[in-house]
Image (cartoon, rainbow, N blue to C red; front, top):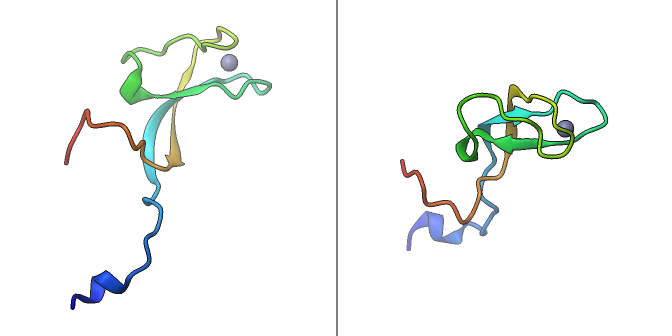
Length: 68
Ligand SMILES: [Zn+2]
């Protein structure tokens, strides 16, 4: 029996991902850079030019675009 088999199933650990963040305080718009152009895109909600940032979020389950 492997020791690791006794571990409870846990959610996937969050990871730091590069994001585009909306600079408007009233707007929560953001997107993963993985899914955006390399240049700052306009916020899809308010149209402001987004700024580079990072977020600590769970990895997407349905992404198979990149593998380690
Ligand atoms: Zn916005």
